[in-house]
Amino acid sequence: MSPLQQPKRGGNLNAFFALLNQEGIPEGHVLLHKVMFAFNYIPETAKPIHITAGDQGSGKSGWDTAEKALLDPGDWSEHKPPTDEDQLTRDFWQNLIVCYGNISKLSEEQ
Image (cartoon, rainbow, N blue to C red; front, side):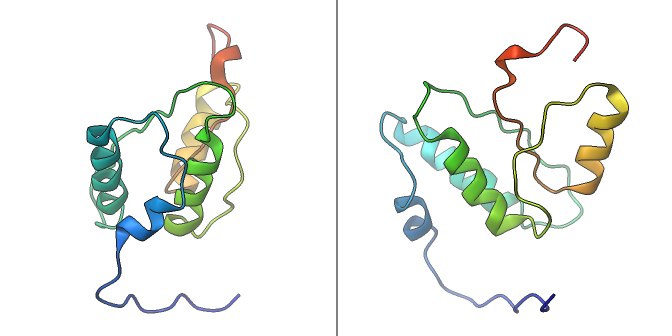
């Protein structure tokens, strides 16, 4: 695996967000998302929990997967919802960003 490149000053976060489906998302929510995105680059701080919700086909998985691919050098596929607390702890310990798809079907125990 190649080493990560050194960050460069400049750039435009708006260019990244322009690639994502923002239809129907209030402007304030997009701004909050940008702040949360940038906050993930600050090392050794508690990270916010981001929950993406919306209609089927609204781009939730695409949005989360794109962010995860940029921020988290680990496996960027969606994780299956945890079956117990130990699995949940492992998911968050081993990844900067964890994306669970289709969690509307979680049981009471999960």
